[in-house]
Image 1 (spheres, rainbow, N blue to C red):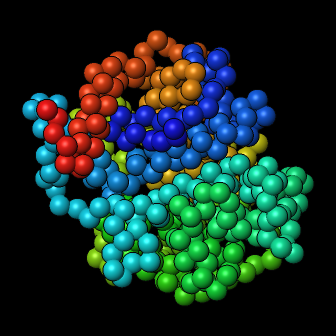
Image 2: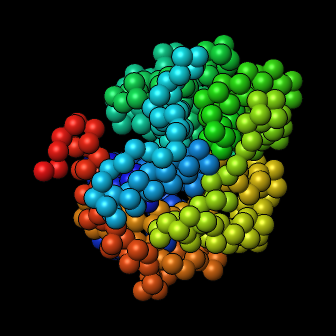
Length: 394
């Protein structure tokens, strides 16, 4: 089963990983997720579930629900009783009367957006034997690298089709319909808007309102309509539209009276033994962002890698960008990844440089934090199920 168990901070992947990953300080996966040696299943599963982990770290909405469940779990551990949630919050899978979809659907769509981007929709369409969008190209030549990249047509088609499309499709389909099928505009604004939306207490309302606002933005319309070669790839547009979209986001926050609060600023204050080191890790990451041209000189001269436009929290908005994925994977990896053949634990240290991929574990990992939690959380999940089903533990 592939899942992210948020109470534990555990990414669980139903695929085997190379055995030599077990003692790696940093997984080479973050540098090259589509390496043939990893296999296609591992690439998609690990990317998708790790995106959920990064979503949690960036989202005050998700963090509030985690901490509420952590409180219920703590009471269960002390008393053996499963109590009602002491904080009244709408269920994440609740679709309110005026909303076109639920926050859960939007969250899953967000994760699917990036696992498709990372794998390449053109590659997935070919691997799964789909016909793809009729009459439209799947690939385009990157004018910077001269390599083949995917088109917005391939991306839009796969976001709405495939064997698991029904779980993820509604938010992106709604976005495309609202923008009258403008693929470039939809792909360009989606990850920035949904990232901001989950930093508020009402993600669906904020997302829908900000889509309406960004669709009216002349600056955004102008940028996405430009036909210069660098803009021809949808996976370059995020950097170019960043400023115009964020300007809309900040105004929407004021107009809707929905303040933006980032999860990473709060997670360290609540005593969770697994998550408490991540604010410090984030500060180390922020230091690296300012030195990317020095650490990664190959990117220094490329205008599309415009880190000055992306704020410190923006790394969580764009985890499918190769260099940002690498930074997040190195500095903010999941605390534990349960592969089919072994468990990998994050080192409590962080790398001294972005390229330090060969160092082995220091011997000081988060493994100890999991030992008192695994059995208790498994028991808690079983007790929760029994309570929902009206069954007696006796």
